[in-house]
Length: 59
Image (cartoon, rainbow, N blue to C red; front, side, top):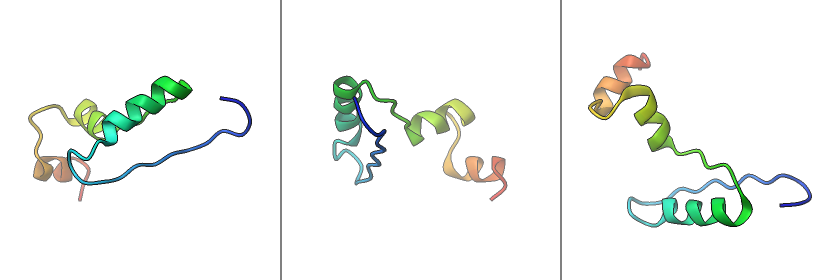
């Protein structure tokens, strides 16, 4: 990619293709992709439910 850096934010319903589209952008533009799901998994593990995460972050 040349020129000014760009930021693309995607949101949508579950199973609407956000991750698939992000993977295509990553491949095409050598882009960095930040996934809320992957970040949450890394911070809180696979067994943490929403209530447990809220407690851990003090909400």
